[in-house]
Length: 370
Length: 245
Image 1: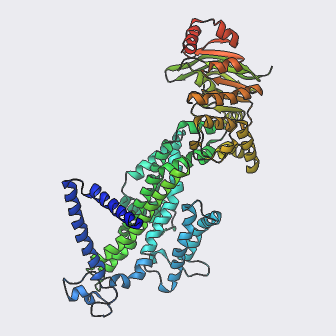
Image 2 (image 1 turned 180 degrees about the vertical axis):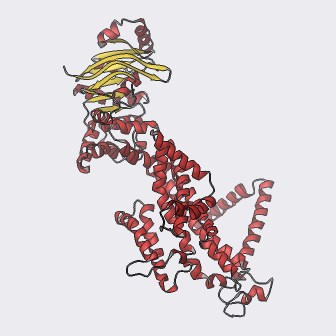
């Protein structure tokens, strides 16, 4: 008896919610109906295209797809959806670029350790966090050694790197290097020392006033001019310099916003206790300012991660570059949708992850203390 | 008596605005001085000059035989010995109460963490809120926050304490708990310079009263004389307003 009344109560609750939120007026009802039809149409079309009517490794006749002419949609036009075989065929390139196939385990090794290297920074209540943080500092050197090679490992030049490897290398390293640089820039911009201050202002405003593409071209063409003869940094390093400078200017502005939100009384209290500038900055100002600046910082990180795909214009093959190379291949050409949807999905996974982490952090810091 | 603070013809301007005009003041060890006056009279600015949160432009300020100049080493040394309590408490919101108090001993005095926390606890007991040690400032009432701020200042073991309107931001029922701590501190012989409008407190603890108006010290006298027989008309007017409201 009680279960029944509970159930009817529950049903009543959902019913009320639906009436109240979806059909409260005729405009609302109309919008609800249109939206449902739209979602249904687009959703079924996409699911059908991407899964139910799609080829994965074989076509509708069960043949292994080795070039585009085997795709079901090319045999029976209009009846079949995506032909994902291109992703399978080019999988190694998407993940590793032109990295020698017998050395690919090194890249996998670096990929596998990446979560371990960042988990310590992301979660402050992690058990044994101290050791994870140690690893965070070792990781870049380990990763560089594994990827590039050195004693005991054959050298794989960065011109062989590509795909997700280049995207992650530029994104993660760019953000990692830009973060400390941006803190220094943001502090410098608020410095009382006129030379330091104007240097930082000029740097930030110059970099922010120039498109990333221009910076990439500049780094690619002009960096060698500033360096002594014989020192010829490779393309990837040039792109990394441009990306890092670009990101640091934007991040510095985000952090400056946080710094400005700290009441003057905080600095005065720290000073009156005898803390010097660096102690005040490190213990009082930055922890509060960075917390406030989390959403805009993550925003710039997401922006940068996507902007790394611009490096294809200076001849580097990031994820997007590899995709375009695959499409240029006569055996696979014209499978645009498959390639771009796949690339979008990969970018989306990383950016959505960053976005969710930022929300989690905001929530956590809000409840942690007032 | 040993002189611990001396101000000599101190002048300060904010751009064109002349905030402090020829301020002379001498404070002996153990003295308690209460500064009052209308808002904008320069009383906060004066005590903020004593630990160099504000810089004066003319005249001399000597604390513990050290003159305050742009020399950062002197400023740091003086700040270690001069504690300050603010109207808005200015606790560090991202640190727990005990971390707020032990921060300066650990970083400025290079004290081991354990020792600094023991000291922090002993001062929390002194201000009667040891049970709040693990909370964050935002979880405390205004009166509790101000007592933590006093404990934080005392943990550096200063021999002079500056109070800048310590009860002005508090609800009336919390004023007493803060004043009680300050009275106890006065009884223990701390040298205190207090900007406040709490005349009851002034009568209880002050050795000297100072009345400021328009950047000048208008009147300086013992509390007895100040309240019963003020010399200047400006002081009389101020007292009649503040005591009869």
